[in-house]
Length: 289
Image 1 (cartoon, rainbow, N blue to C red):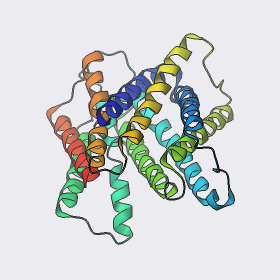
Image 2 (tube, helix red, strand yellow; image 1 turned 90 degrees about the vertical axis):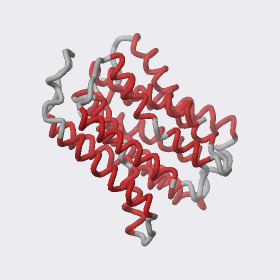
Image 3 (cartoon, one colour; image 1 turned 60 degrees about the vertical axis):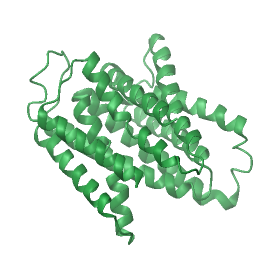
Image 4 (spheres, helix red, strand yellow; image 1 turned 180 degrees about the vertical axis):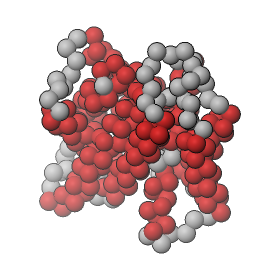
């Protein structure tokens, strides 16, 4: 289940990088969120998850779940945009460092970290610094026609996405104290869809591209996104194996980076590769702890 989640989310992120480069991050995300919302709605309906959901005693959890959707929408919007103007192999590991936000929040609440967690936190920070510091010429070593933004902008957008991503996970965890995980995920995708829709309309853009050919790609993208979430959800049932499932699932950036390496000929310099490795190993350790 962890492997299926990692592959689904990793491929979905790679698709997002390509669609965002062609039709813009907002419209790419909007199409994915629409399909994902439909898939999760069907899952929740058959699961009976709508029964006694909208009751006064659960309003606070519903609000937190909605905040999860709102912040996740902007985290993904920045992530998709960063991948459309920068190297996927640089953006993906920086965004994947989002568990640091959760760790910092827990420490601020008075929790104590183990030695392994401290080492992992330092490793992730060093990894992000190596990726960012060695990305000055990130567009000079490939033959792609892709138009790159300045490396500082790509790194800053990726860091902002990572911070929002971690914040969204904190809202998800808090909401899950009052409603089920599947209900939180449903709110996340539905609220996220309307958030991005309002954003697109506010910019006076057409919500979806005029060509019908994009809908097949949206369907695949949304199915992979919701599938990745559901594989992780169904694979964690309170058993000791939950940690292993979560650790394996957290490797989805490796899939995205691998596809960028194979299909787009993206290459990382030694320091960038070292940084990406530190981030991914550190994140896996944090998730496992």
